[in-house]
Length: 115
Image: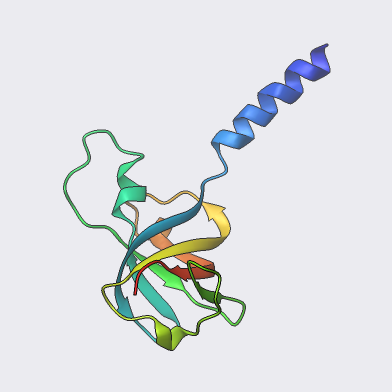
């Protein structure tokens, strides 16, 4: 009985601490090995009375990062342009906050949501 209670409490704690797995936002700019994507919604969902400030995330692109459209069709980095909406699936879940360090993330996949 005690094991069950401990298991449930640990599971609930871990579920609450896993962080963000993905977010959607406007692609602001494209760099050599990164995209800058608006992640304001993700930052503000953790803050009550959040100011109307834009929060960019630096999304690092690696050799393992996959690119696709929302239908699953394979794309490459050149198919993305500034101003489009993307879904960024993170390589590892993490908490995204106002802190600049927390907004430096690595992408496992980037999905183009509009053309």
